[in-house]
Amino acid sequence: MPTSRRPPRSPRASAADKGTKPSALHPRNPHTGRYDLVVLADRCPELSTHIIANPRGEATIDFANAEAVRCLNQAILAHHYGITHWQLPAGYLCPPIPGRADLIHYVADLLARCHGGQPPKGKRVRVLDIGTGANCIYPILGVRSYGWSFLATDIDPVSIAAARAIVDANPSLRGKVTIVQQQPGAILQGLLNPQQRIEVSLCNPPFFASAAEARAANQRKRDNLSHHRGDAGVKGNPPVRNFGGQQAELWCPGGERRFLQQMIAESRPLAAQVCWFTSLVSNGDNLAPLKKQLRAEGVAQLEVIPMRQGQKQSRMLAWSFLSPAQQIEWVRGETTS
Image (cartoon, rainbow, N blue to C red; front, side, top):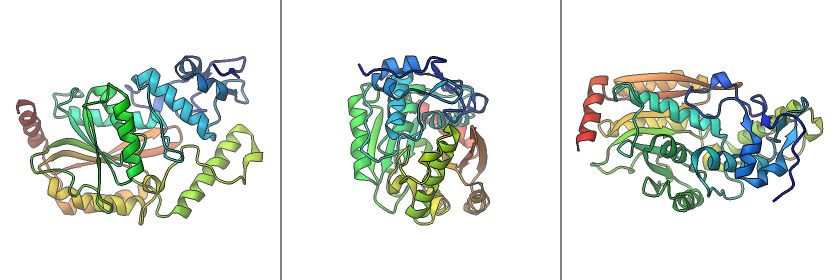
């Protein structure tokens, strides 16, 4: 077992260190408060080699260190979700799990509206994950938190292979997650046959419009992390994303706005097959044009659900071409079929 470098004080990472305010997370999110690094290191012994002390003497990890973040994620997935095999290709996105879990729980609240006020559970709840990535994180969280079944898509063959390997290696996911490669340039188009029905679609779209934008934002993140640690010497080093990420995960021509404009246009033909469409929207300036487009498409319901993790403000955009009454009938038809 690797030698631990735990500091003498608290074995829990502070909320500030993990970039999350406990009160900001969804009430059902299990990642409020502090990480218990002793417990997590028991699930992933390699994590113990990355535990350090922050300036207050509290246990934490270096969130600018990609290996430390990877080990933390492996430990969290093992401890909270029973995922014992989770490997990523080098350089691919290693997502912060508390924020990803928040989306799943807010989606469950959205679905509760047509399920008698209770978040629905079980494999009859079919979810479409657009751009699942090599990490397959939303299917993992949705299956393990609510027992939902997933159709997960991506355009990158490396991501597809990695996500399938994760599903195949974990018995709790097998039979509940189907991984499908989407054609480049398409988002929803061509994914569903006329008989398929999806209760909700999820998406965390590429944010940046170019690789240069992604690199610049990553350098700012590194500088902010360095400042938080009081380690000014890291500034100016070659950028290394602490959470990784490839082109399809981080940027696309036109960025988040153009991606979601295309997704909205492609959602209209699936109006009767998908009960709710949802997506994260990181840039608040994109909301007005997206809402205008959705109204022009004739949606019956349109909502913006605020989400916040620490200093990061985000929101979930949700729309449906079905009225609330039609959604209830839609769900009843699914549960009796």
